[in-house]
Image (cartoon, rainbow, N blue to C red):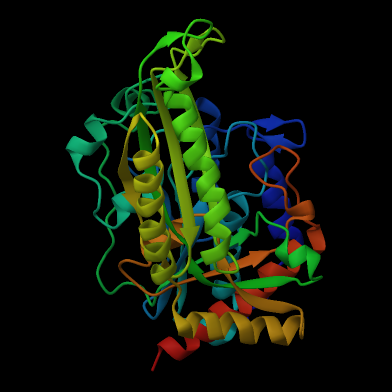
Length: 410
Ligand SMILES: [Zn+2]
């Protein structure tokens, strides 16, 4: 059985936390000085683990194993949300390096190897998943030209140049090098903790469909315009949001979620009837049929509110990602490893958050494993997990990795 070294794993995880410490969390935006320092440190750690490590032209840190036999690719992201947590992404990257070391130390797996990856900008300071998407050949140079920072508008090209990455080649997946990709991550939700379970085996990563809805009315004086004469764009969209919240629970599946993330009234003043309003809306589910059901219901509600309101209402779909199914064989390997180390304390579950594994799943078998998040908190500096749970997660992943590699010889 592949055995991790818990002290070594926790020590690396704690060191990574020192790059951009903010309270008990971390502030490490993609391509910032501190982010690049952490990536260079990862190159050192990967090199120390006998991997050939480089930072590529989009900021991915990739360490390649010299093993001649079956190989797995493991990893996650290393940048954080603004004032985010210390484990989101970081844990999966350090797990990947520990798996490379543990497999190299296992006498029974000397021909097998683990490559470790820290993908760039999963968190979307510039563009979500740009590192893993680049690796699977899904990002053009023209696309890079058009991207800028969501915080301050810095062109991505300038950020790459400042980070010392301009002109470097972008790593591209080598066909047939891997049996597949595995990612470990904190759950970022309360499910495992609330059920006193230690391991979540991800069945699928949800699809997210997003819409922009615009209402056009007539801007006017809020004191002199009679209620019956108003064409109030704000009220039209609030009616729509309310109608969604009334109807969606009737057709929702157990883990369906939907959110009005933004609502803007123009010009936005207490004494003015809004002439225009804009709403951003999304829903998520792991089942494509449920996503289609929501989409049809949403279209009907837009039509119904528009028919009943003096404003014109138009809805445009901004994006529609398909749910990514995790590989059944990898799910079985993770479940069996969890049953071995924490019998009965694991479950299969969908991921409501997006992860790099959904990108890699487009080109190879992919699997994902969660450990509990204390209080279900994430995307906040107070995010944390019990160190004992981190170690359990590492050992479960190592056992699954060993199992998949050994079977990969056949
Ligand atoms: Zn993450």
